[in-house]
Image (cartoon, rainbow, N blue to C red; front, side, top):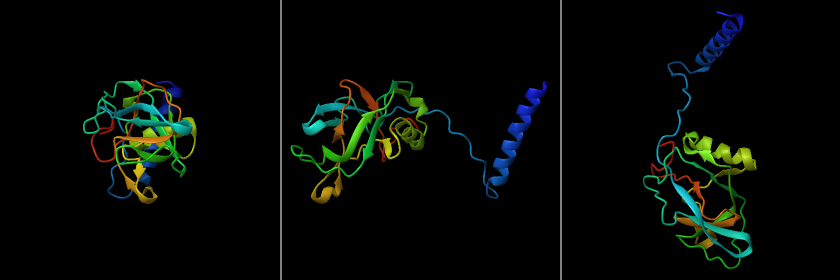
Amino acid sequence: MRFSQLASLAGAAALAATALLAAPAGAAPAQPAGPGTHAGLTWGKMADGPDGTVQVGTGNSGNPYQGDTPASAVLPVLCLNVDGSPVPDGITPGFYAGWAQGTVAASRPVRGSRLNSLTAANSVCQAQFGAGWRIAEFHDGHFGPDLASTGGWSFWAYGDLPAGTRMWTYINDQRANPWD
């Protein structure tokens, strides 16, 4: 065995020992998450609206109950930055088309299997657009007095998205994400 191989093995052993020593008594060491394998939910741009807004949603092909796109697909992540933007004139938020109070953008395309956790999905958005950005969630549309209620299926936000492109989207109460 070469010295460089021995050094690599020694370094790996030291890291493993550090992880074991840092773990609470009786706790199993953390295992890296494997690739996402479940079909994931995707949304697309549904319409352009007033003042640079877009409506995104499931459209005719999104499946929020089981996912609609295999994790092997390479698609952008639908990213959202919630900044408290007020509803612009010309949009009346409702249950099926709420207001997301921010801006959406499409990330560079990524393989769904890379989205092996919510943290991994959010990191795609943060790496490209910065702090405060995250994957958009099915229930991000708000409506009602003071926008206190949330709906689903679609929402409005500021942004400019490509037409005809599906984007990975998260849902928090169904098993329809690549990491499920």
